Image 1 (cartoon, helix red, strand yellow):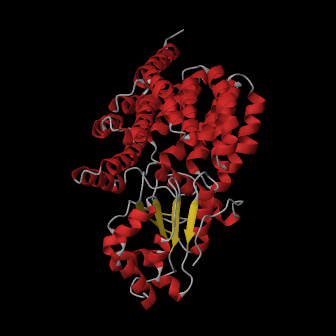
Image 2: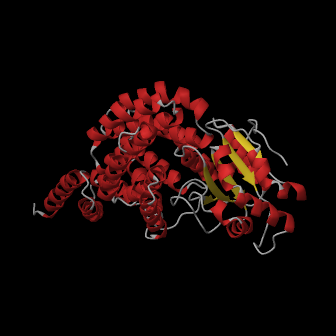
Image 3: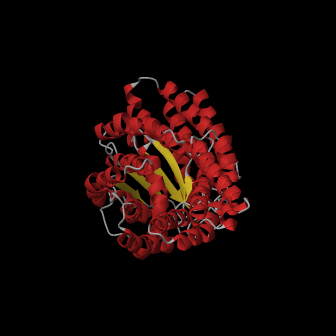
Length: 474
C-alpha cells in the first residue's frame, strides 16, 4: 500500500480541468479544524494522487494511501492508524474502482468492516481531514458496510470534468458546468444541515456549513438573509479562542455581502481593521491575499484607482506569485488590467485582457470569469471612446453570459453599465433601450435593498430628460 507524504511536483496536463475544483476543496479544508471524513467522488487513483500532489504543492502536507493488493484492502484501518500526520496535514485515501456497491470483493468487505469497528481510533489518531476518494460504487460500499465510520463524514463533493451535467459547487466556477440559481436543492440542503449541526451542538461544523450557504445567498442577492446569518454565526461562535479564525472568515463573508449591497465604507473598514489583520495573525497568507483583492475591488469601485493599483501591485502581486495557482494569477492580472485601463493605459490593458487573460479562461471553460473579463474589456473600450465596441461586447456577450448563469449581481452591474454606454451614445433608440435596462435594474436593486438603487434612479432621470428633449418641438 502506498502511503506517506506526497512531494511537490508539476501539475499534469490531465489535471488542469480539475484545478478550480481543487481550489474550492482547499478552501473547504481551510475551514476545518481537526478530523473530518470528507468524501470525494472521483474516477480513480490517478486523479486522487493528482489531488494529493496538488494539495502538497499548495502549503498542506498530503499523505496518500492507495490499497493495491488484497492484503492492502484488508488492512485499510491499520494503514490509516499507522500514519502520523502533523497539524495542518491532510490524508488522501484512494479506494478501488468499484462500479457497483454490490460487487464488493471479500477482502474489501473485511477491510470496511474493520474500518467501521476502529472508527474512533482512526479519528483520534489522525486528527486531520481525511479525503475519502473513489468512484460512486466505492463510496456507496463504504456507507453500506462501514455505516458508523461513514456517519462522521462532512458534506463532501464530486470532481467533474468539463462537459458533464452535474455540479457540486456554485454555478459557473472554473471547470464546473453551471446550473440555474433557481435550482434550490443545494441551499435547502445546507439549511437543513446547518440546523442539524446546531441541534447537535457542533458549532464549528455549523459555522462551516453556514459559510457555504452565505455564498449562495450572496450569489442570489439575498443579502439581508446572508447578513443575518453571519450575525447568527458570530453569536454562536462567541468569544471562544478556538473559533478565532472562523470568526475572521465569517467577518470576511460579511464584508463581501456589504460590498455587494453597496455599503462600501463599512465593508472597507471591516477588511482593513479586522479581516486582513486577522488572517495575518493566523498566518493564512492565501486568505489574506484574497481579502486584499476584495479591498482593492472596493477601492476601484469607489474611484480610488491609484490606491487599488498600488495595493495590488505592491502587496498582492509579489506574494501571489508564490501563493496563487495559475488561474488565480490570471484573475489578478485581469483586475490590474482593468484599473490600469480605467486610468488611461487603454492599449496596454486591452492587450493584456485579450491576449493573456481571456484566452486563459476560455481554455479552462470558466464561463463566469470570461464574462467578468469581457465586462472589464467593455469598460475600457468605453473609457477609450470606443462606444460601439463597449455596447456590442456588453449586449452580445457579457449580459447573455450572466443571464445564462442566473447571476443576478452580474446582471445588475452589466445592465447598468450597458445603459450608461447607450446613454453616452445618445441615439433615440439607445435611450429607450437604456431606460428599459435601468427599469429592470432598479426593480432588482430595490427588491434587494441595494444602495445602488439611488445611482440607477438618477441615471434613469437623466435618460427621461434626454428623451423628453428629443420629443419637444423645435
